View 1 (cartoon, one colour):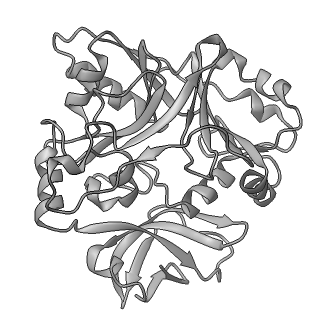
View 2: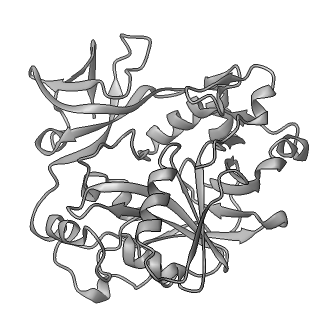
Length: 351
């Protein structure tokens, strides 16, 4: 993948780079940035995400055959989410999707684009599609708004373990409406952080101009983004999940990235078996921490119960209203106990 340059918005006053060094962790006030994003709207620089573009008449049918989402009926200027699984049903890649009528845009986590690109190239065979790394030319931003405009996302309910085909429409389980914008970019409404959340794809050489469009708009860093994301139980692939994760362990993905009644794809047997015959071995849950340690626990910190390790912390953050919160992958039996006594480092935690 293209080596993504640091964002020009790191030149703003007070900006502190995040661990990756490409975008801001905060701009001097992470808690006030959260409040601004939640109450009056803000812009998040997510230009460190990696972008893959797929063109060709067969692009949707081909991606449909490889992934968990129903993509053949995705219409122009609509988005969704999808997963790419191993043969045994483990989640290998997650991508947000947008089709502009000519190109399917896939944006994925920093560091995962190369693996996804290689997988797609290996699965191309003789399919008439073109796959290219677009990270060097395009960048993603996410906005929250105090007032939402237009139609929001449409999601199908998760069907019962035994369901008839008529219970699920042959369309993506989550449809994110969008539209084209000048210069070849687009916007995609998701409502993931707050009502009115939308993503915007812009040319990378136009990032600096975003501040010129509305110099008074609040900007917020990845600290604020993660805090609002955890509050919304919105997982981050590869941080809140690990190499053993199966789709049903992440409740959010069941409503956003998986269609349970579609044609064959790699890993489908595991998805069907877990849904119809049993329960996933673990579940991603949201935890409240008691705050006795002023610093939220690091990703990977063990979660214990009665002295036994029962899971791990994914993302933990200091929320401007809720205090320390985290997403944690826990064993199924522990996750099912709302009053389970949990320990994270030196802190007590509860669901």
